[in-house]
Amino acid sequence: MERDINMEEISDGRLYGLNDMVKADCRDCRGCSVCCRDMGTSILLDPLDVHLLSEGLGQNFEALLNSGYMELHVVDGMILPNLKMDENRNCCAFLNEQGRCSVHSFRPGICRIFPLGRFYENRDFRYFLQVHECPAGRSKIKVKKWIDTPELQKNQQFIREWHYFLKDIQETFETEAGLARQKAVNLYVLREFYQTPFREGEFYRQFQERLERARPACGLTL
Image (cartoon, rainbow, N blue to C red; front, side, top):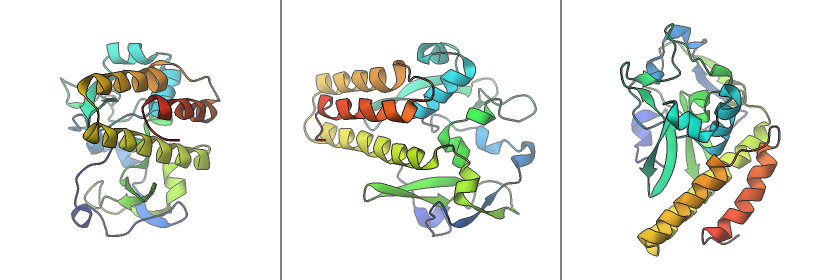
């Protein structure tokens, strides 16, 4: 979902595509872990994030909630999961004692692209560099190499479609939906995209199938 931010204050003023060079290489972070602390509810999880966490940890959606790895909260009228902070350490529950990510190979997308962020416009998105994050001395790296995501083109399409699917629902909430319909839509989205597992190796195909069913079910045009 979108945040109300001033791009001039947090970025270098540029927007980046996958083949652009960007000063984002933090040299393996070296145990810094600042970005894993004091994050509150800001690390939202999309269906791919939850799918990968479920596969990597061998836990379904409910087990991830019950284990304290994630929680649900309302964002722009939508009930969505986010990474849960360890209340005693005020850091991500996956941050180990050495200050390293214990799920690094299947970490969520927001974590994977940091210190880059996504800027959405015109039913698409590009990346921007958060200049006040991560230590000084970062080196240049190609965007697609930094985000290091398998099946990259399918992934980019998924990110676009998921973001604008949620945005379209939010707009219907603002104009026409009563509380009963909002609740029904939220329960549908949680069930279809989070609680119901995706088969291994078929995430993107199954996501497209579910999205085609979900748009009319949620009152949206195809």
